[in-house]
Image (tube, rainbow, N blue to C red):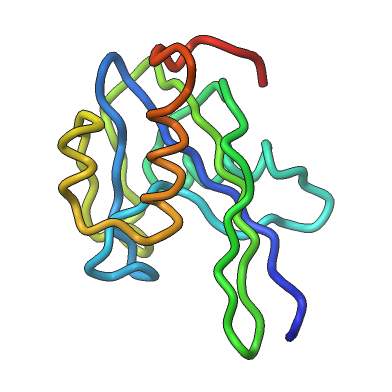
Length: 138
């Protein structure tokens, strides 16, 4: 199998809601803002940059939710997902990448048609010892 492309995403929380997006890449499926790591960039910076580019939010990372792999015979992605907080909820969508975005509770998010990796990351986020996204360290 070919090498996996490194990528990062962020489950972004504002108050009691999580940001979900449908991108041109995921089409009908919902996921979280994210994308490919650029050369010389660490995955934490990737998650912050991609969230800013895709939805216009500055975020603070709070938890590392682990790595999720999407593998294809020709390659794939290793996505590092983080939990994050945004002090603002107003979105500025990148129309070249994002089809739709919405803020939702965990329960509402579970009812969305999520990508497999987004569903796995959401469940990991939901299982954090303290449901507050501010608990823990980077």
